[in-house]
Image: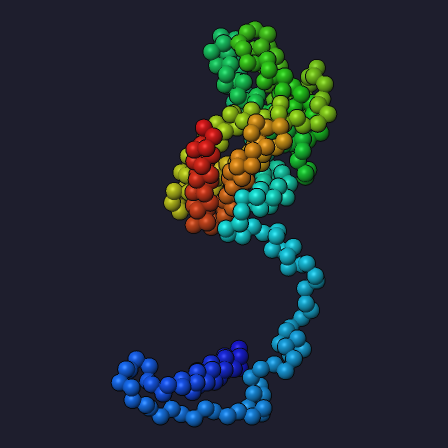
Length: 325
């Protein structure tokens, strides 16, 4: 390094000397008196004077190690989004990650468990159901969404073998609970009980035929997913408000961040309302990217990075609401 610095200093000195000697009018810079001033003579160099300053063969003397394979640099650059890249590039980069890179299996299982707990409190009596059936309907809509993710999950996770059956029952429960009534209450209670049994290690019992594939147009209600995202945002902001809150709410923040990343991807799935709109897709991809950055920051105990990522999630929500509300 010292030798390289010496070379650079010497080269700069030579260039400066050449420029000064080339000032043909003989006038000192900054003066207008017209007087001539004697300059130093242009230095004369021989070939020996350049030895050790420049490489004779750059590839033989200056480079270390094997050169990268053709196209490797371009592939590496394209794999990591860079600041200032276009929304289309962001969408493509986001689409390259599988579900397991957005939400861990424990976090996915937690989302399903939380819905089972919510249904336990919502489905108590027919009388209560008659006034709270919309809450039950929203819970089943989110259950269908998360089970659709479970069915396509690209890693080992609990209940994946039952996902096609659970999704069929959840889809039907969404339809059934759109209106109150005794039949609606009984069906919802039966699905809730089967879900409880499955979480406890038993089979998921239902008369519904398992779905053959995920139909995102059926499994996702965009409005309900957006409400779920809006619910999480203030929790994220509270968990990254200061260093103490960040330390205390680490696990909860990680749960919400990974859930937001997955739900942002859900909103871009084929068949979901407005998912085919490019601007909407770019907004969803921006939220996903920010949520993934928040997940990484929490795992690294990086409070400034987490706070910045949470702010970007909030900004992506505001941008989406401003354009699509």
